[in-house]
Image 1 (cartoon, rainbow, N blue to C red):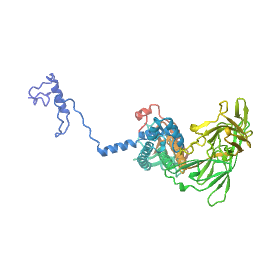
Image 2: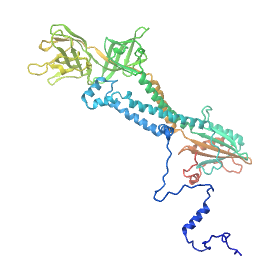
Image 3: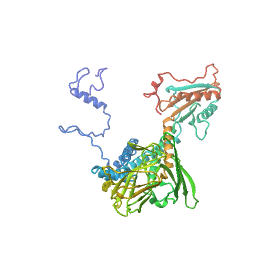
Length: 601
């Protein structure tokens, strides 16, 4: 007979079992039995075999990615925002050598001098492309990777954003008491009228550009709801910003391919033609076609400058005559920061100075050189340095004259200097060199420098360099019977810079779009508002709640404006004498909304 308090399994207890209250003879056995009771695995489940003793702990083997998996992982890394920012920073870093080191497209003689002065480092930098940074392989690689990264990041985000914009606002939550910002107002209008007023207040006066996306619904029991959402303009601005960055990259690349720039130094009474060979320096993109240059001519008629008594510049004016194909010559003016538009390009006034017109005769009295020689200003009072090279002498060695032009000279025992930029008392101070000018060696030379490696400075009887002082209209004999120099006149010269870059307009537009998109993405608020309109006996109770994606100080004001518009147009009032209200909840409300203080969006 089985006792009343006996357990059903006591009779079927296996041999060696224990009665209730007795200690288990083996704790491991008890644990095994408990585990058997809790084991809910299928009957056909097969466990992995236990490792053999001494084999050590079992290790998991990760699956191999394979070629497709590796490519997919690489693409995801490349198109991530983190990598895009890293590439943008890297692009700025690799651009630094282009500003620090001389560049071949801009100044080839400076590159040659750098390599000559740095015989160990210079050739290596040249091989690696540091003297033509923006055409180097490594700069182009970073540029293209950044472009691909931005495009790969933008396209999927654009698809997701378009789907989100077309989607309906989230439906009204069942409970408003868990929101930190909520309110309520009692009106006398019917629920349908309240919905119409709320939709109009939320959408705003501009129907084509509504403030909120609005949707309404009917809950069981006839309760009307209104859902409204705004803030997708924030993501739109973000996408516009990134698209503008792509536009800047494309525009800069296009400009580098199609642009050209030429510099010419023009003396009064002379001009130049818009031809590659007529410029002193000329650089262009790899896709530039010289035949695309408009064949116009420009002549400098007159240059005037004005200065204060303290030698501060007031105005620089270049009066020119431009002749374009199929059009009569026209007069024009070029000022600083006021370029001349001609031939799809702009001509800027970059500099000016004096170009003394001199005539040099050799020892036989023959004219060996005649013409204007530009002297480059070195200070605000136009102390200008220049070189007169005389290679075509009939007899004897070639002659080089190096010195300074002083527009308003002041000569003292300490020396000569200029005290004012205008030519009130002009003076040429020259030293004489003889020998081989090196013009026949086939090596390009700077016209404003004298290569004295094969020249000898002419000295006087005391061993000091001979110095010549020449004034306008004077003829001064050269030492040692080398000939003479005559100063004929003092015309002015201008340095003109002609530029054409078809991408400048697009760079400006893209930059403005980037700035606008960034501003919108930073300041456009992301907000959601809900209304629940419950009909009552002779009144309608409008409950509202609001939620922001982040801290938003204007959220409470947004809700109050909405409830105020509803109350004003729908007859706010309470038959029982209660006042309509729009309020915040207590400070403990965010604690009921989750760890972040608000429900997830």
